[in-house]
Amino acid sequence: MKIEDLQLREIIDSRTKPTVEAEINNVLGKAPSGASTGRHEAEAFVPEHLDLKEEQLKELVDRDLTQEEFDHKLREIDGEEKFAELGSVAIASSFAFKNAEGFQHSDRFPLPLSNVIGGGEHGGNTAIQEFLVLPVNAETFPEAVETNTKIYQELKERYSQKILGMNDEGALITSMDDEQTLKALKKVADKYDARLGLDVAASEMYENGKYNLSSMRQKFEPDQHMKFLQKLIDEFDLVYVEDPFHEDDFHYHAKLTSKNPEILICGDDLFVTQKERLQEGLDNRACNSLIVKPNQVGTVTDARETVELAKENGYTPVISHRSGETTDHTISDLALEWECPIIKAGLADIRIAKLNRLITLWDRKEEPEINQEL
Image (cartoon, one colour):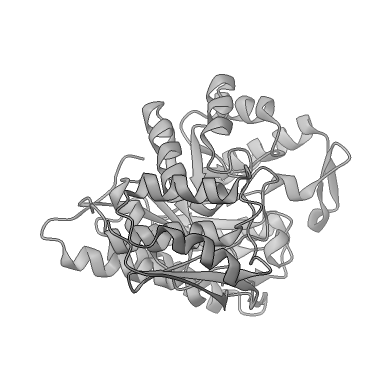
C-alpha cells in the first residue's frame, strides 16, 4: 500500500490518560494501554516531542510498503527492543496502516469472553482482577453478546445492594469477597447456560514469594495458591483461568495446565504476545492458551507471528482489549482475519465498540458461523 499521508496526534483514552492516534491515508488507528501490565511488554506512552516522531515517520510517505515492511520500519526508527522511543506511536501507526490496507475477514466469529465483575488493579473489592462469562452454547455472535449482557444486567438487579458501581473496564464492583462473588455470578450464569472464567492477574498480588489475596485476608505459598485455584476450578466449573501465577513462573503454570487439560489455562503477563516468551512456554508446557494484545508487542505483524506460533502448537489465541481503551475496533477485525476463537472485552462503556463492530460484520456476512472449537 502506498502511504499518501501520515499524521500523529495526542488524544485521551477511557481513563482520561493521554495516548496516540495515528492517521494514514485518512484512516485512523488508536493506541490502548493497560493498568495491569507485564514487565516484558512493549512500552505504552506518548513521546514528549510527538511532532518530531511524526517527522521521522513522514520519511515513509510516498513509499509503497506491505504491513510487514511498514512494521519493520517502525522498529528501525525506534531502535529499542520494547519501543522505548516511539511508545504508543508504534501500535497506533501499525493499526492505522492495517485499517487503511484492509482485512481478510473470515466467516468464523469469536465467542465474546466478557468481563462482568472486576477488582484488582482495575478497581474493585476483589483480589482477583476479572470475573468472566463465556456463552459456550450460543449459536450466533449477536446471541452470544445478548447472553452476556443479560447476565450483566441481572447481576446488577439481583445484587443491587452489593453492587458498588463500575471499574475502569466497565465491570461491576461488588462488596463481596472473591468466593462470594463467584457464587453469585454462577447462579446467574447457569440460568443463561454460560460458563465462568477468571483473570487472576497473579503478578499483581505477588509479594515476597507469596500470593496476597487481601480481600480474603489470605496469603498463600505457591503450593497453597495452586490448591486454592484448583478448588475454584472444581467448585465453579471454570472453563478459563488467566494468569494464575506470577509472570515468570512457567513451572506452576505448567502444573496447573497438566492437571486441567480440558480447560483454558491462559497466559497474559506470562507471554505478553511475544513469540519468544510463548516459545519458552511451549518448551515448558506452560498454559494451552494465550492473550493477544497487539500493543504488548508493538505492531500488528509481531502479534500475527505470535498467533501463528500459537496455532501451530495447539494453543488457543484470545484477542483482548486493554483497561485503557479507545473506540478503535482493530482487534475485532483482526479476530476475524486471524480466526481467533475468543475475543475478550468488557460489556459496558467505551469497549462496546469492539462488540458492536463484530455485530455489524456478522450482519454483513451471508453465512457466518460462531466458533465452536472449545
